[in-house]
Amino acid sequence: MNEVVCCKYTHETGTVEEKPTIDDKDFILTIDKPEHSWFYIKGTRRNFFETDHIEVWFDEEDTEKETIICVDNYEVAWSFSENDAWKEIAKKYCLDVRMTGYERGMQFSQVRTYYRDGISVTDEVKKYASSEDWMWNCPMPNFGG
Image 1 (cartoon, rainbow, N blue to C red):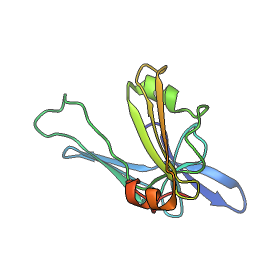
Image 2: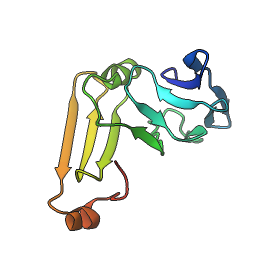
Image 3: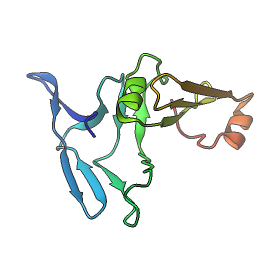
Image 4: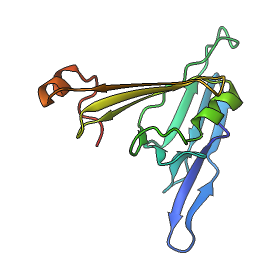
């Protein structure tokens, strides 16, 4: 969780980083943000979590097993950008990172995966032919700008 920071805006200093509170017990890692701040991924552009805390649950029986972390309320303005830090984060921590996004106004969805080798990236964009096609076939038609 070294790449997750909390930011806070004040009129005096502008945006400043704050440390989240991390609690690691009983196979649950909980990260809480300070009041009036937001979670942010270092090195990314406009990547935020709209939540007060993040929980990561581990398998009690097999701590060596791969862990899948699903973060809800993750918001990225615009699109997933090639110049974001996700490639470096994937390589540094040996992670595969998959993000799914929706653009309601222009009616397209995007799935981008950054692979743990730090080189490979897949980008799948699905465009919808009409508003009816969007509402019927898009998995999350009420998401996006």
